[in-house]
Image (cartoon, rainbow, N blue to C red; front, side, top):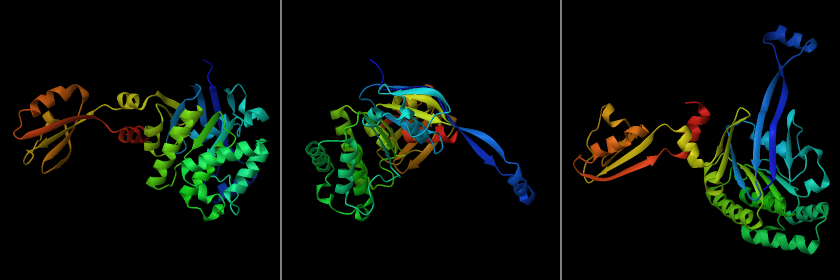
Length: 325
């Protein structure tokens, strides 16, 4: 099966002015400017199949948004190639633009002082959608997002969560085949985050929309994406499942011991590292090869009521991966 999105050696390099220090350096910079090249995206190879919902993870400045902008045609690459739905994105052919949608969580596509209904009508006219079809889609999506009663309210009067729901409706109005989502839940409260996740899970699966999702909330990725691509310094360092991230980048497991009475005072290297303790429990950090040995030793402890062996939380693995610690 042909991939919907395919990139080969995709690069984007920026020239950045280097200001020399001091007053003399500033004056010299007026006449002789020095630049250095910064690779925001540095040779990405990526394939995404029809209907896949792929999480795109990385620290700030890793190249996530730059990649999405190139794949959606907003930026020209410095090198490499990409095909989306059989088109070269930055050629911006009309048929290509009618089949994709890009939603940037920090950018508004709705007109601030007008009701969302007016922006939807404008989008309908731009995409040449039949009015009956367009408003059937708006009614369906607004019902799923529970914002049907807000369509005539000026966008500036909507809450952040309500506004993001309207942005999603605008992004999906023309029924795109490819959807690029950049931080769609950024700054939202927990209830709004859950609502948008549920909405995306249902709509993307039902309509088989090929989707790339970036988010700083790992809960978004865990809830929606079977596959994650991790990018750092413009390069892909992982492409697979979240479970494979933990397996590939974590070098320890955690053992939690719970006791019917007061927990014994464990100490010494034979127990690994003590992460935390309370009156009735202890949490240990151990190397994978020592899990069986330490678990057997724990079975001999008086009052042991429960023993739980866990992989390291994904959040911790990702945090350590990005911090280099």
